[in-house]
Length: 268
Length: 362
Image (cartoon, rainbow over all chains, first blue to last red; front, side):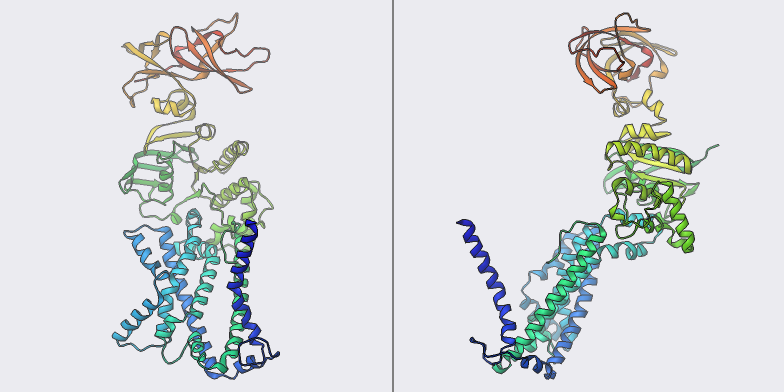
Protein backbone atom coordinates (compact mmCIF):
# COMPACT_ATOMS: atom_id res chain seq x y z
CA UNK A 1 0.00 0.00 0.00
CA UNK A 2 3.03 2.23 0.43
CA UNK A 3 3.26 2.73 -3.34
CA UNK A 4 -0.43 3.69 -3.35
CA UNK A 5 0.04 6.49 -0.81
CA UNK A 6 3.08 7.79 -2.67
CA UNK A 7 1.00 7.97 -5.85
CA UNK A 8 -1.73 9.94 -4.08
CA UNK A 9 0.87 12.28 -2.61
CA UNK A 10 2.49 12.86 -6.00
CA UNK A 11 -0.89 13.56 -7.58
CA UNK A 12 -1.91 16.00 -4.83
CA UNK A 13 1.41 17.76 -5.21
CA UNK A 14 0.97 18.23 -8.96
CA UNK A 15 -2.62 19.44 -8.54
CA UNK A 16 -1.49 22.00 -5.97
CA UNK A 17 1.27 23.17 -8.34
CA UNK A 18 -0.68 23.44 -11.55
CA UNK A 19 -4.40 23.75 -10.76
CA UNK A 20 -4.25 27.52 -10.19
CA UNK A 21 -2.44 27.97 -13.49
CA UNK A 22 -4.97 25.73 -15.23
CA UNK A 23 -7.72 27.98 -13.88
CA UNK A 24 -6.26 30.99 -15.70
CA UNK A 25 -7.48 30.06 -19.20
CA UNK A 26 -10.76 28.72 -17.78
CA UNK A 27 -11.76 32.12 -16.46
CA UNK A 28 -10.07 34.02 -19.25
CA UNK A 29 -12.68 32.61 -21.63
CA UNK A 30 -15.55 32.85 -19.13
CA UNK A 31 -18.31 35.29 -19.97
CA UNK A 32 -18.60 36.91 -16.53
CA UNK A 33 -16.71 39.37 -14.29
CA UNK A 34 -16.87 37.24 -11.15
CA UNK A 35 -14.22 34.57 -10.71
CA UNK A 36 -16.45 31.72 -9.54
CA UNK A 37 -18.17 28.58 -10.73
CA UNK A 38 -20.44 27.84 -12.44
CA UNK A 39 -19.08 29.18 -15.71
CA UNK A 40 -21.36 31.50 -17.61
CA UNK A 41 -20.36 31.09 -21.28
CA UNK A 42 -17.55 31.33 -23.77
CA UNK A 43 -16.13 34.67 -24.87
CA UNK A 44 -13.11 36.34 -26.46
CA UNK A 45 -14.19 39.64 -24.93
CA UNK A 46 -11.36 39.88 -22.37
CA UNK A 47 -8.68 39.27 -24.94
CA UNK A 48 -10.20 41.92 -27.18
CA UNK A 49 -10.16 44.33 -24.26
CA UNK A 50 -6.40 43.78 -23.78
CA UNK A 51 -5.88 45.49 -27.11
CA UNK A 52 -7.69 48.64 -25.98
CA UNK A 53 -5.78 49.43 -22.75
CA UNK A 54 -2.97 51.85 -23.67
CA UNK A 55 -1.36 51.82 -20.21
CA UNK A 56 -1.02 48.05 -20.50
CA UNK A 57 0.79 48.34 -23.82
CA UNK A 58 3.24 50.78 -22.28
CA UNK A 59 3.86 48.40 -19.38
CA UNK A 60 4.42 45.44 -21.70
CA UNK A 61 6.89 47.34 -23.86
CA UNK A 62 8.66 48.68 -20.79
CA UNK A 63 8.92 45.18 -19.31
CA UNK A 64 10.17 43.66 -22.56
CA UNK A 65 12.83 46.35 -22.93
CA UNK A 66 13.97 45.86 -19.33
CA UNK A 67 13.95 42.06 -19.60
CA UNK A 68 15.93 41.97 -22.85
CA UNK A 69 18.52 44.46 -21.58
CA UNK A 70 18.80 42.62 -18.27
CA UNK A 71 19.20 39.25 -19.98
CA UNK A 72 22.02 40.52 -22.19
CA UNK A 73 23.87 42.37 -19.43
CA UNK A 74 23.52 39.55 -16.88
CA UNK A 75 24.69 36.97 -19.43
CA UNK A 76 27.70 39.01 -20.53
CA UNK A 77 28.71 39.49 -16.88
CA UNK A 78 27.99 35.81 -16.27
CA UNK A 79 30.26 34.77 -19.16
CA UNK A 80 33.13 36.86 -17.76
CA UNK A 81 32.68 35.55 -14.21
CA UNK A 82 32.19 31.89 -15.17
CA UNK A 83 35.17 32.01 -17.50
CA UNK A 84 37.43 33.49 -14.84
CA UNK A 85 36.17 30.99 -12.27
CA UNK A 86 36.88 28.08 -14.60
CA UNK A 87 40.29 29.15 -15.90
CA UNK A 88 42.12 31.36 -13.48
CA UNK A 89 43.26 31.29 -9.89
CA UNK A 90 43.59 34.49 -7.96
CA UNK A 91 43.73 35.41 -4.30
CA UNK A 92 40.31 35.58 -2.68
CA UNK A 93 38.63 33.81 -5.60
CA UNK A 94 36.26 31.84 -3.38
CA UNK A 95 35.26 34.92 -1.43
CA UNK A 96 34.67 36.99 -4.56
CA UNK A 97 32.58 34.24 -6.18
CA UNK A 98 30.64 33.80 -2.94
CA UNK A 99 29.71 37.47 -2.79
CA UNK A 100 28.68 37.50 -6.46
CA UNK A 101 26.39 34.51 -5.86
CA UNK A 102 24.92 35.92 -2.63
CA UNK A 103 21.92 37.77 -4.23
CA UNK A 104 20.63 34.31 -5.12
CA UNK A 105 19.59 33.83 -1.49
CA UNK A 106 19.34 37.45 -0.34
CA UNK A 107 15.73 38.56 0.31
CA UNK A 108 14.71 40.73 -2.63
CA UNK A 109 13.01 43.23 -0.40
CA UNK A 110 16.38 43.94 1.27
CA UNK A 111 18.07 44.39 -2.11
CA UNK A 112 15.23 46.63 -3.31
CA UNK A 113 15.11 48.86 -0.23
CA UNK A 114 18.87 49.30 0.05
CA UNK A 115 19.19 50.07 -3.67
CA UNK A 116 16.39 52.61 -3.37
CA UNK A 117 18.05 54.31 -0.39
CA UNK A 118 21.42 54.47 -2.13
CA UNK A 119 19.98 55.78 -5.41
CA UNK A 120 17.94 58.47 -3.66
CA UNK A 121 20.89 59.49 -1.50
CA UNK A 122 22.96 59.90 -4.66
CA UNK A 123 20.21 62.12 -5.98
CA UNK A 124 19.53 59.93 -9.02
CA UNK A 125 16.08 59.74 -10.52
CA UNK A 126 14.31 56.41 -10.84
CA UNK A 127 13.49 54.95 -14.22
CA UNK A 128 13.82 51.90 -16.39
CA UNK A 129 17.59 51.87 -15.93
CA UNK A 130 17.34 51.55 -12.13
CA UNK A 131 15.07 48.53 -12.56
CA UNK A 132 17.59 47.07 -15.01
CA UNK A 133 20.33 47.67 -12.44
CA UNK A 134 18.40 45.77 -9.77
CA UNK A 135 17.46 42.96 -12.13
CA UNK A 136 21.03 42.49 -13.37
CA UNK A 137 22.05 42.20 -9.74
CA UNK A 138 19.67 39.30 -9.08
CA UNK A 139 19.94 37.66 -12.53
CA UNK A 140 23.75 37.51 -12.76
CA UNK A 141 24.07 34.74 -10.11
CA UNK A 142 21.62 32.57 -12.07
CA UNK A 143 23.56 33.27 -15.23
CA UNK A 144 26.85 32.34 -13.53
CA UNK A 145 25.37 29.16 -12.08
CA UNK A 146 24.26 28.05 -15.56
CA UNK A 147 27.42 29.13 -17.38
CA UNK A 148 29.77 27.73 -14.73
CA UNK A 149 28.89 24.17 -15.66
CA UNK A 150 29.23 25.00 -19.35
CA UNK A 151 32.73 26.42 -18.86
CA UNK A 152 33.82 23.75 -16.38
CA UNK A 153 32.85 20.99 -18.82
CA UNK A 154 34.88 22.56 -21.59
CA UNK A 155 38.11 20.61 -22.10
CA UNK A 156 40.92 23.09 -21.67
CA UNK A 157 43.06 21.39 -24.28
CA UNK A 158 40.48 22.39 -26.94
CA UNK A 159 41.46 26.01 -26.44
CA UNK A 160 45.15 25.14 -26.24
CA UNK A 161 44.86 23.16 -29.47
CA UNK A 162 43.37 26.18 -31.25
CA UNK A 163 46.19 28.43 -30.00
CA UNK A 164 48.70 25.75 -30.96
CA UNK A 165 47.25 25.76 -34.48
CA UNK A 166 47.90 29.49 -34.87
CA UNK A 167 44.89 31.28 -33.39
CA UNK A 168 45.17 34.19 -30.98
CA UNK A 169 43.48 33.94 -27.58
CA UNK A 170 40.63 36.15 -28.81
CA UNK A 171 39.97 34.27 -32.05
CA UNK A 172 40.16 31.01 -30.06
CA UNK A 173 37.44 32.33 -27.77
CA UNK A 174 35.31 33.27 -30.77
CA UNK A 175 35.88 30.09 -32.84
CA UNK A 176 36.04 27.41 -30.13
CA UNK A 177 34.91 28.54 -26.70
CA UNK A 178 31.84 30.55 -27.65
CA UNK A 179 30.24 27.94 -29.96
CA UNK A 180 30.80 25.20 -27.38
CA UNK A 181 29.23 27.12 -24.48
CA UNK A 182 26.42 28.52 -26.67
CA UNK A 183 23.72 26.25 -25.21
CA UNK A 184 24.63 27.61 -21.77
CA UNK A 185 24.47 31.18 -23.07
CA UNK A 186 21.01 30.63 -24.56
CA UNK A 187 19.80 29.08 -21.30
CA UNK A 188 21.22 32.01 -19.36
CA UNK A 189 19.55 34.57 -21.64
CA UNK A 190 16.19 32.86 -21.30
CA UNK A 191 16.31 32.41 -17.55
CA UNK A 192 17.41 36.01 -16.99
CA UNK A 193 14.71 37.24 -19.37
CA UNK A 194 12.04 35.25 -17.53
CA UNK A 195 13.19 36.31 -14.06
CA UNK A 196 13.28 39.97 -15.07
CA UNK A 197 9.94 39.83 -16.84
CA UNK A 198 7.95 38.64 -13.81
CA UNK A 199 10.03 40.22 -11.05
CA UNK A 200 7.84 42.39 -8.83
CA UNK A 201 9.51 43.63 -5.63
CA UNK A 202 12.57 45.35 -7.10
CA UNK A 203 10.54 46.71 -10.00
CA UNK A 204 7.92 48.03 -7.56
CA UNK A 205 10.52 49.94 -5.53
CA UNK A 206 12.80 51.16 -8.29
CA UNK A 207 10.40 51.85 -11.14
CA UNK A 208 9.84 55.49 -12.06
CA UNK A 209 6.72 56.81 -13.71
CA UNK A 210 6.55 53.92 -16.20
CA UNK A 211 5.50 50.70 -14.43
CA UNK A 212 6.61 47.25 -15.55
CA UNK A 213 3.99 44.63 -16.37
CA UNK A 214 3.88 42.96 -12.91
CA UNK A 215 3.65 46.36 -11.22
CA UNK A 216 0.85 47.38 -13.59
CA UNK A 217 -1.00 44.11 -12.97
CA UNK A 218 -0.74 44.55 -9.22
CA UNK A 219 -2.28 47.99 -9.63
CA UNK A 220 -5.16 46.58 -11.66
CA UNK A 221 -6.11 44.00 -9.02
CA UNK A 222 -7.78 46.79 -7.04
CA UNK A 223 -10.51 46.95 -9.71
CA UNK A 224 -12.64 43.75 -9.63
CA UNK A 225 -13.99 44.35 -13.12
CA UNK A 226 -10.43 44.13 -14.47
CA UNK A 227 -9.74 40.65 -13.10
CA UNK A 228 -10.93 38.69 -16.18
CA UNK A 229 -8.64 40.87 -18.31
CA UNK A 230 -5.75 40.00 -16.02
CA UNK A 231 -6.68 36.35 -16.44
CA UNK A 232 -6.57 36.73 -20.22
CA UNK A 233 -3.17 38.38 -20.01
CA UNK A 234 -1.96 35.59 -17.70
CA UNK A 235 -3.12 32.99 -20.21
CA UNK A 236 -1.09 34.62 -22.95
CA UNK A 237 1.99 34.80 -20.70
CA UNK A 238 1.74 31.12 -19.72
CA UNK A 239 1.38 30.08 -23.36
CA UNK A 240 4.34 32.26 -24.31
CA UNK A 241 6.53 30.83 -21.52
CA UNK A 242 5.78 27.27 -22.58
CA UNK A 243 6.59 28.05 -26.22
CA UNK A 244 9.78 29.90 -25.20
CA UNK A 245 11.10 27.15 -22.94
CA UNK A 246 10.25 24.42 -25.41
CA UNK A 247 12.12 26.24 -28.16
CA UNK A 248 15.11 26.82 -25.88
CA UNK A 249 15.17 23.17 -24.86
CA UNK A 250 14.96 22.10 -28.50
CA UNK A 251 18.02 24.18 -29.37
CA UNK A 252 19.86 23.08 -26.27
CA UNK A 253 19.34 19.39 -27.06
CA UNK A 254 20.35 19.90 -30.66
CA UNK A 255 23.50 21.66 -29.46
CA UNK A 256 24.33 18.84 -27.08
CA UNK A 257 23.80 16.24 -29.81
CA UNK A 258 25.96 18.15 -32.27
CA UNK A 259 28.77 18.53 -29.75
CA UNK A 260 28.54 14.80 -29.02
CA UNK A 261 28.17 15.37 -25.29
CA UNK A 262 26.01 13.52 -22.82
CA UNK A 263 22.70 15.15 -22.01
CA UNK A 264 22.95 15.90 -18.31
CA UNK A 265 21.30 19.28 -17.88
CA UNK A 266 18.35 21.25 -19.07
CA UNK A 267 15.04 22.28 -17.63
CA UNK A 268 12.52 20.09 -19.42
CA UNK B 1 74.63 15.59 -40.90
CA UNK B 2 72.10 16.29 -38.17
CA UNK B 3 71.77 19.51 -36.25
CA UNK B 4 69.88 20.20 -33.04
CA UNK B 5 66.34 21.44 -33.67
CA UNK B 6 65.64 21.87 -29.98
CA UNK B 7 68.11 22.97 -27.34
CA UNK B 8 67.21 22.97 -23.68
CA UNK B 9 69.65 24.88 -21.51
CA UNK B 10 69.32 24.47 -17.75
CA UNK B 11 65.53 24.70 -17.90
CA UNK B 12 63.96 25.22 -14.48
CA UNK B 13 60.25 25.43 -13.78
CA UNK B 14 58.48 26.25 -10.56
CA UNK B 15 54.73 26.03 -9.92
CA UNK B 16 54.55 28.13 -6.79
CA UNK B 17 56.79 26.24 -4.36
CA UNK B 18 56.79 23.09 -6.44
CA UNK B 19 60.00 22.57 -8.37
CA UNK B 20 58.70 20.76 -11.45
CA UNK B 21 61.77 20.94 -13.71
CA UNK B 22 65.19 20.93 -12.08
CA UNK B 23 67.75 21.87 -14.66
CA UNK B 24 66.96 20.13 -17.92
CA UNK B 25 69.79 20.08 -20.46
CA UNK B 26 69.22 18.32 -23.76
CA UNK B 27 69.60 18.64 -27.49
CA UNK B 28 67.12 17.00 -29.80
CA UNK B 29 68.20 16.47 -33.39
CA UNK B 30 66.36 17.23 -36.58
CA UNK B 31 64.31 14.26 -37.77
CA UNK B 32 64.72 12.38 -34.51
CA UNK B 33 62.03 10.35 -32.78
CA UNK B 34 62.66 11.41 -29.20
CA UNK B 35 60.78 10.18 -26.13
CA UNK B 36 60.37 11.65 -22.67
CA UNK B 37 59.77 8.67 -20.43
CA UNK B 38 59.01 8.64 -16.75
CA UNK B 39 56.45 7.93 -14.05
CA UNK B 40 53.56 10.36 -13.58
CA UNK B 41 54.63 13.57 -11.89
CA UNK B 42 58.21 13.37 -13.17
CA UNK B 43 57.82 16.57 -15.20
CA UNK B 44 57.75 15.06 -18.70
CA UNK B 45 54.47 16.67 -19.69
CA UNK B 46 55.56 19.98 -18.18
CA UNK B 47 58.71 19.84 -20.29
CA UNK B 48 56.63 19.17 -23.41
CA UNK B 49 54.37 22.11 -22.57
CA UNK B 50 57.43 24.29 -22.05
CA UNK B 51 58.62 23.38 -25.54
CA UNK B 52 55.13 24.05 -26.98
CA UNK B 53 55.00 27.39 -25.18
CA UNK B 54 52.03 26.67 -22.91
CA UNK B 55 54.28 27.11 -19.87
CA UNK B 56 57.02 29.69 -19.37
CA UNK B 57 60.39 28.61 -18.08
CA UNK B 58 61.31 29.98 -14.65
CA UNK B 59 64.97 30.17 -15.61
CA UNK B 60 67.01 28.68 -18.43
CA UNK B 61 66.52 28.80 -22.17
CA UNK B 62 64.62 26.93 -24.86
CA UNK B 63 65.87 27.29 -28.43
CA UNK B 64 63.96 25.95 -31.40
CA UNK B 65 65.83 25.86 -34.69
CA UNK B 66 68.49 28.04 -33.09
CA UNK B 67 66.08 30.80 -32.06
CA UNK B 68 65.41 31.63 -28.41
CA UNK B 69 61.75 31.06 -27.58
CA UNK B 70 61.48 33.46 -24.68
CA UNK B 71 58.18 35.36 -24.92
CA UNK B 72 57.14 33.52 -28.10
CA UNK B 73 53.50 32.41 -27.83
CA UNK B 74 52.46 28.84 -28.81
CA UNK B 75 50.74 30.11 -31.97
CA UNK B 76 54.04 31.61 -33.15
CA UNK B 77 56.21 28.53 -32.53
CA UNK B 78 57.10 26.05 -35.26
CA UNK B 79 55.71 23.25 -33.13
CA UNK B 80 52.35 21.51 -33.15
CA UNK B 81 50.91 19.25 -30.54
CA UNK B 82 48.78 16.13 -30.36
CA UNK B 83 46.97 16.30 -27.04
CA UNK B 84 46.31 13.39 -24.73
CA UNK B 85 42.57 13.95 -25.09
CA UNK B 86 43.13 14.63 -28.83
CA UNK B 87 41.19 17.91 -28.38
CA UNK B 88 39.15 17.35 -31.54
CA UNK B 89 36.78 20.32 -31.93
CA UNK B 90 33.41 18.62 -31.42
CA UNK B 91 31.35 21.22 -33.26
CA UNK B 92 33.34 21.00 -36.51
CA UNK B 93 33.50 18.34 -39.21
CA UNK B 94 36.60 16.19 -39.68
CA UNK B 95 37.69 18.31 -42.66
CA UNK B 96 37.26 21.59 -40.77
CA UNK B 97 39.17 20.15 -37.82
CA UNK B 98 42.06 19.09 -40.03
CA UNK B 99 42.05 22.37 -41.98
CA UNK B 100 41.71 24.52 -38.85
CA UNK B 101 45.33 25.62 -38.78
CA UNK B 102 45.20 26.76 -42.41
CA UNK B 103 42.40 29.26 -41.74
CA UNK B 104 44.91 32.11 -41.71
CA UNK B 105 46.97 30.87 -44.64
CA UNK B 106 44.72 32.59 -47.19
CA UNK B 107 44.30 29.53 -49.40
CA UNK B 108 41.62 29.19 -52.04
CA UNK B 109 38.84 26.75 -51.32
CA UNK B 110 40.24 24.24 -53.81
CA UNK B 111 43.74 24.47 -52.42
CA UNK B 112 42.46 24.04 -48.86
CA UNK B 113 40.40 21.01 -49.90
CA UNK B 114 43.42 19.47 -51.59
CA UNK B 115 45.68 19.97 -48.56
CA UNK B 116 43.06 18.55 -46.18
CA UNK B 117 42.56 15.58 -48.52
CA UNK B 118 46.31 14.92 -48.56
CA UNK B 119 46.55 15.11 -44.78
CA UNK B 120 43.62 12.73 -44.34
CA UNK B 121 45.14 10.32 -46.83
CA UNK B 122 48.44 10.40 -44.95
CA UNK B 123 46.73 9.14 -41.78
CA UNK B 124 44.51 6.67 -43.65
CA UNK B 125 41.24 8.56 -43.30
CA UNK B 126 40.50 9.39 -46.94
CA UNK B 127 36.82 10.13 -47.46
CA UNK B 128 36.13 10.91 -43.82
CA UNK B 129 36.19 14.70 -44.30
CA UNK B 130 32.45 15.25 -44.13
CA UNK B 131 31.98 13.18 -40.97
CA UNK B 132 31.04 14.84 -37.71
CA UNK B 133 34.02 14.80 -35.37
CA UNK B 134 32.06 13.36 -32.46
CA UNK B 135 31.05 10.33 -34.51
CA UNK B 136 34.64 9.02 -34.68
CA UNK B 137 36.18 6.14 -32.74
CA UNK B 138 39.19 6.63 -30.47
CA UNK B 139 41.68 5.49 -33.11
CA UNK B 140 40.11 7.75 -35.73
CA UNK B 141 40.22 10.76 -33.40
CA UNK B 142 43.90 10.06 -32.88
CA UNK B 143 44.45 10.12 -36.64
CA UNK B 144 42.47 13.34 -37.07
CA UNK B 145 44.57 14.95 -34.33
CA UNK B 146 47.74 13.82 -36.16
CA UNK B 147 46.53 15.11 -39.53
CA UNK B 148 45.49 18.42 -37.98
CA UNK B 149 48.92 18.92 -36.41
CA UNK B 150 50.94 17.74 -39.42
CA UNK B 151 49.05 19.79 -42.03
CA UNK B 152 50.97 22.88 -40.85
CA UNK B 153 54.28 21.13 -41.58
CA UNK B 154 55.75 21.98 -38.16
CA UNK B 155 59.45 21.57 -37.47
CA UNK B 156 58.61 19.58 -34.37
CA UNK B 157 55.55 17.47 -33.56
CA UNK B 158 54.82 17.12 -29.86
CA UNK B 159 52.82 14.09 -28.72
CA UNK B 160 51.44 14.01 -25.18
CA UNK B 161 50.68 10.37 -24.29
CA UNK B 162 48.88 9.98 -27.61
CA UNK B 163 48.25 6.24 -27.31
CA UNK B 164 47.30 5.91 -23.66
CA UNK B 165 43.55 6.06 -24.36
CA UNK B 166 43.61 3.22 -26.89
CA UNK B 167 43.25 -0.48 -26.17
CA UNK B 168 46.33 -2.71 -26.35
CA UNK B 169 45.89 -4.07 -29.88
CA UNK B 170 45.13 -0.69 -31.41
CA UNK B 171 47.95 0.88 -29.42
CA UNK B 172 50.50 -1.55 -30.84
CA UNK B 173 49.18 -0.99 -34.35
CA UNK B 174 49.35 2.80 -33.93
CA UNK B 175 52.92 2.56 -32.61
CA UNK B 176 54.04 1.03 -35.87
CA UNK B 177 52.00 3.53 -37.89
CA UNK B 178 53.49 6.45 -35.99
CA UNK B 179 57.03 5.22 -36.68
CA UNK B 180 56.24 4.87 -40.38
CA UNK B 181 54.58 8.27 -40.47
CA UNK B 182 57.57 9.88 -38.79
CA UNK B 183 59.95 8.36 -41.33
CA UNK B 184 57.68 9.49 -44.15
CA UNK B 185 57.38 13.14 -43.10
CA UNK B 186 60.88 13.39 -41.61
CA UNK B 187 59.71 15.77 -38.87
CA UNK B 188 61.15 15.60 -35.36
CA UNK B 189 58.68 13.82 -33.06
CA UNK B 190 58.82 14.31 -29.31
CA UNK B 191 56.72 11.74 -27.49
CA UNK B 192 55.75 11.87 -23.85
CA UNK B 193 54.92 8.49 -22.38
CA UNK B 194 54.92 6.58 -19.10
CA UNK B 195 54.98 3.28 -20.98
CA UNK B 196 58.59 2.08 -21.17
CA UNK B 197 57.74 -0.56 -23.77
CA UNK B 198 56.19 2.07 -26.03
CA UNK B 199 59.27 4.27 -25.67
CA UNK B 200 61.60 1.37 -26.48
CA UNK B 201 59.59 0.36 -29.53
CA UNK B 202 59.24 3.80 -31.06
CA UNK B 203 62.18 6.00 -30.17
CA UNK B 204 65.55 6.79 -31.66
CA UNK B 205 66.49 8.22 -28.29
CA UNK B 206 64.86 8.26 -24.87
CA UNK B 207 65.27 10.63 -21.95
CA UNK B 208 64.24 8.92 -18.72
CA UNK B 209 62.99 11.48 -16.21
CA UNK B 210 62.59 11.27 -12.46
CA UNK B 211 61.66 14.15 -10.13
CA UNK B 212 62.07 16.88 -12.73
CA UNK B 213 65.48 15.72 -13.90
CA UNK B 214 66.76 13.65 -16.77
CA UNK B 215 68.25 10.52 -15.21
CA UNK B 216 69.57 9.11 -18.46
CA UNK B 217 69.39 9.97 -22.14
CA UNK B 218 70.37 7.25 -24.59
CA UNK B 219 69.16 5.12 -27.44
CA UNK B 220 66.82 2.28 -26.45
CA UNK B 221 69.40 -0.47 -26.59
CA UNK B 222 71.95 1.29 -24.41
CA UNK B 223 69.21 2.30 -22.02
CA UNK B 224 68.08 -1.29 -21.72
CA UNK B 225 71.50 -2.92 -21.55
CA UNK B 226 73.44 -0.32 -19.64
CA UNK B 227 71.12 1.66 -17.35
CA UNK B 228 73.14 4.20 -15.41
CA UNK B 229 71.27 3.97 -12.14
CA UNK B 230 69.36 1.30 -10.33
CA UNK B 231 66.22 3.42 -10.59
CA UNK B 232 66.45 3.64 -14.38
CA UNK B 233 67.15 -0.09 -14.52
CA UNK B 234 64.10 -0.80 -12.40
CA UNK B 235 61.86 1.46 -14.52
CA UNK B 236 62.84 0.01 -17.90
CA UNK B 237 61.75 -3.60 -18.27
CA UNK B 238 62.43 -6.21 -15.61
CA UNK B 239 65.79 -6.22 -13.79
CA UNK B 240 67.04 -8.63 -11.16
CA UNK B 241 69.15 -7.18 -8.40
CA UNK B 242 71.54 -9.07 -6.14
CA UNK B 243 73.70 -7.55 -3.38
CA UNK B 244 77.35 -7.46 -4.35
CA UNK B 245 80.70 -6.39 -3.00
CA UNK B 246 83.64 -4.93 -4.88
CA UNK B 247 86.76 -6.90 -4.00
CA UNK B 248 89.30 -4.91 -5.95
CA UNK B 249 89.61 -2.75 -9.03
CA UNK B 250 92.54 -2.80 -11.40
CA UNK B 251 92.40 -0.64 -14.50
CA UNK B 252 89.61 -1.88 -16.74
CA UNK B 253 88.84 -4.85 -14.52
CA UNK B 254 86.64 -5.05 -11.43
CA UNK B 255 86.50 -8.16 -9.27
CA UNK B 256 83.22 -8.57 -7.43
CA UNK B 257 81.56 -11.01 -5.07
CA UNK B 258 77.82 -11.54 -5.82
CA UNK B 259 75.44 -13.00 -3.26
CA UNK B 260 74.35 -16.41 -4.55
CA UNK B 261 76.50 -16.35 -7.69
CA UNK B 262 80.00 -16.06 -6.30
CA UNK B 263 83.02 -14.22 -7.66
CA UNK B 264 83.08 -12.64 -11.08
CA UNK B 265 85.23 -10.31 -13.08
CA UNK B 266 83.56 -7.52 -14.99
CA UNK B 267 84.88 -4.64 -17.06
CA UNK B 268 84.67 -1.04 -15.86
CA UNK B 269 82.15 -0.03 -18.56
CA UNK B 270 79.66 -2.32 -16.80
CA UNK B 271 79.89 -0.06 -13.77
CA UNK B 272 78.22 3.27 -14.69
CA UNK B 273 79.17 6.33 -12.70
CA UNK B 274 76.89 8.37 -10.55
CA UNK B 275 73.41 8.06 -9.15
CA UNK B 276 74.32 5.50 -6.51
CA UNK B 277 72.21 5.12 -3.40
CA UNK B 278 75.04 3.72 -1.27
CA UNK B 279 74.26 0.03 -1.49
CA UNK B 280 76.27 -1.93 -4.04
CA UNK B 281 74.37 -4.39 -6.19
CA UNK B 282 74.47 -6.04 -9.58
CA UNK B 283 71.57 -6.06 -12.01
CA UNK B 284 70.83 -8.41 -14.87
CA UNK B 285 67.92 -8.94 -17.23
CA UNK B 286 65.76 -12.12 -17.11
CA UNK B 287 66.74 -13.09 -20.65
CA UNK B 288 70.46 -13.15 -19.79
CA UNK B 289 69.81 -16.24 -17.65
CA UNK B 290 69.10 -19.57 -19.32
CA UNK B 291 67.85 -22.84 -17.91
CA UNK B 292 70.15 -25.69 -18.99
CA UNK B 293 68.31 -28.80 -20.06
CA UNK B 294 69.90 -32.28 -20.02
CA UNK B 295 73.00 -32.45 -22.15
CA UNK B 296 73.40 -28.66 -22.41
CA UNK B 297 76.52 -26.97 -21.09
CA UNK B 298 76.94 -23.42 -19.92
CA UNK B 299 79.17 -21.41 -22.26
CA UNK B 300 80.22 -19.21 -19.36
CA UNK B 301 79.12 -19.69 -15.76
CA UNK B 302 76.66 -22.06 -14.13
CA UNK B 303 74.53 -21.96 -10.96
CA UNK B 304 72.00 -24.26 -9.35
CA UNK B 305 68.48 -23.12 -8.47
CA UNK B 306 64.99 -24.28 -7.60
CA UNK B 307 61.87 -23.18 -9.50
CA UNK B 308 59.49 -21.29 -7.19
CA UNK B 309 57.02 -19.76 -9.60
CA UNK B 310 56.12 -20.32 -13.25
CA UNK B 311 54.38 -17.63 -15.35
CA UNK B 312 53.40 -18.93 -18.76
CA UNK B 313 52.88 -16.39 -21.56
CA UNK B 314 52.49 -18.67 -24.58
CA UNK B 315 55.59 -17.67 -26.50
CA UNK B 316 57.58 -17.08 -23.30
CA UNK B 317 57.72 -18.51 -19.82
CA UNK B 318 58.92 -16.54 -16.82
CA UNK B 319 60.44 -18.50 -13.96
CA UNK B 320 61.14 -17.18 -10.48
CA UNK B 321 64.03 -19.33 -9.23
CA UNK B 322 65.76 -19.39 -5.84
CA UNK B 323 69.52 -19.65 -6.07
CA UNK B 324 70.86 -22.68 -4.24
CA UNK B 325 72.10 -22.06 -0.72
CA UNK B 326 70.60 -18.56 -0.56
CA UNK B 327 67.24 -16.84 0.03
CA UNK B 328 67.67 -14.81 -3.22
CA UNK B 329 65.04 -15.21 -5.89
CA UNK B 330 65.65 -14.03 -9.44
CA UNK B 331 63.41 -13.96 -12.50
CA UNK B 332 64.48 -15.50 -15.77
CA UNK B 333 62.70 -15.78 -19.08
CA UNK B 334 62.84 -18.63 -21.59
CA UNK B 335 61.51 -18.64 -25.11
CA UNK B 336 59.20 -21.65 -25.41
CA UNK B 337 60.47 -24.14 -27.97
CA UNK B 338 58.27 -26.83 -29.47
CA UNK B 339 58.86 -30.19 -27.80
CA UNK B 340 60.61 -28.79 -24.73
CA UNK B 341 58.77 -29.05 -21.46
CA UNK B 342 57.99 -26.11 -19.23
CA UNK B 343 59.50 -26.87 -15.84
CA UNK B 344 57.10 -27.38 -12.93
CA UNK B 345 57.23 -25.55 -9.62
CA UNK B 346 59.74 -27.20 -7.30
CA UNK B 347 61.97 -28.52 -10.09
CA UNK B 348 65.75 -28.35 -9.63
CA UNK B 349 67.46 -26.55 -12.47
CA UNK B 350 70.90 -25.60 -13.68
CA UNK B 351 71.16 -21.96 -14.72
CA UNK B 352 73.64 -20.50 -17.16
CA UNK B 353 74.69 -16.88 -16.60
CA UNK B 354 77.37 -14.58 -17.86
CA UNK B 355 79.39 -11.88 -16.02
CA UNK B 356 79.36 -9.87 -19.25
CA UNK B 357 75.60 -9.28 -18.91
CA UNK B 358 75.87 -7.77 -15.43
CA UNK B 359 75.59 -4.10 -14.54
CA UNK B 360 77.16 -2.93 -11.30
CA UNK B 361 75.36 -0.21 -9.34
CA UNK B 362 77.13 1.50 -6.45
